[in-house]
Image (cartoon, rainbow, N blue to C red; front, side, top):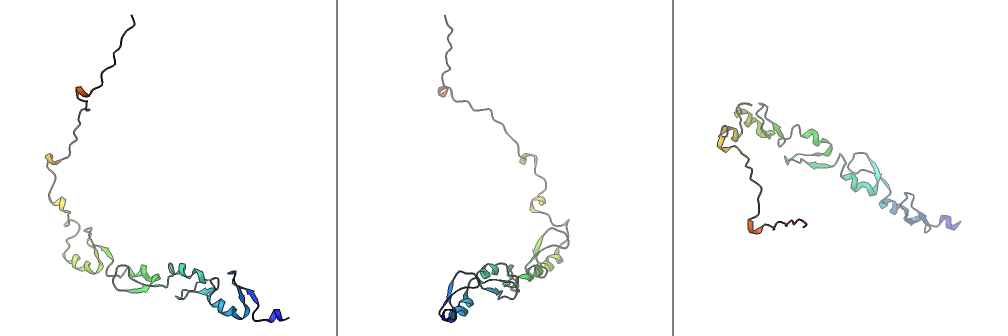
Length: 161
């Protein structure tokens, strides 16, 4: 009877961690047990074993992060994709079709000066076509033959008598 009620008796952890815990210390163990089911402290609502919290931090949508483009905005990870639509440091295409990209907050100044797709040309296209003399040509060389003094002597063929 005493063995069933003794506060010092050993009990297997109910969480399945394999620890044998004294009955009177069971609550303390449960508060730190790696197999204890806990809710994500970031508020996403996911429940997992305490030992999985570290891995969960890598993917939790409620982790608060700074914008990867360093605009200064701080937001939960789940809002990062939506933030790209308004981030002042996000690269956007010129609305006039010139092909250039600028960060969103610099695009108004570019668009004000931009003449559109026909006006912007690459520096090489501004020089005009290459002259015929500058075009690449291929030269073929005859196979190299060793100098006469480096050649192997030819085998002599003798006919039977």
